[in-house]
Length: 427
Image (cartoon, rainbow, N blue to C red; front, side, top):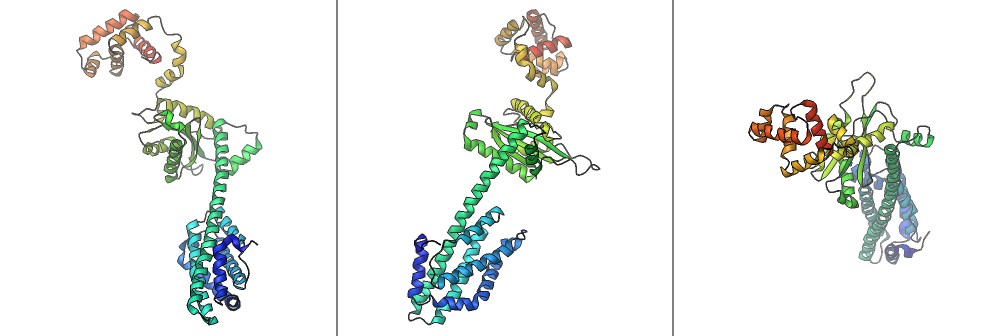
């Protein structure tokens, strides 16, 4: 029990009730009508706050009934001359509602119902007491009912928010640990990790997993926590709209999302469309300022680290013209160049520097001609139309390339060698 000064305003309204002659006599009337007042309070809450009836939680209504009884008991103590208490029963109730994710607004609305029922009953009690100054008594009744509702609402809201934050922090820690385990890989003999993944539902059968990595078109923006968090929230929201389970976090300044969904309902049903293919159009709505790489589908959590590698490669290919890149859609040639470019750069042919300088002097015309010829299946006429030049220009450029490199761009293997050198040499 705490001192009345802990809730000075409520103590003052209680003193005003005593001065008006309502307290402690009203406690006797409450004792006689306790069942009726409690029933009216429960009925008012259920009638005015649909969330209580709509909730599928079987504990909500019985808990509400107990809580109404606790208020009636506390009011009986206060109106019988007791001091203002610590309202631990209100804190405990708010604590339970927060853990069950019952909306705070519904709880506060219920307390407004408490004010109405309490005010109505106390008015009747004050009139029944026939005080010398009825106007003073009724004013004190209104003040007490309002202050009681305000006090319990303030206590409940503070406890609800504190508990929600604590739960969110614990959930955030759990999700961070899960994400770290999944993307970094784990030893399947680690029983603690196995239990953690099993409780989280990641070891269920017939699931598909893929990884999506996202960052701003300007990588420096990812150093801004607010910007990175907006991407996290946006990815979570678009996945939730399609009931795709997503574990999202920020790792190494890149938003990392592990997505999972049921691959097939049972062993007798056909598999669903690839998860990676389903999330690609969803991620396009994140806007032009975000680049995203998506891995291929994988059948188990043990393959998620490989998915991270694939998504990293896909993200490297993402740009403002192709914002969302799926690893499985990348051509083999592009993958080979991406993988081996750094190695090849140290072993480029002797003619490469001459070719690169000549291409620069021609403002890129030599490499453009090689690419156009490849796109036209080595059809000179078609390549000329693509570049809007005369076919003789194509022949002249091919002769120039031959003089520089000793290779004939109109022969398949020579053309392939020239293009690979250009790609790996970043020409």
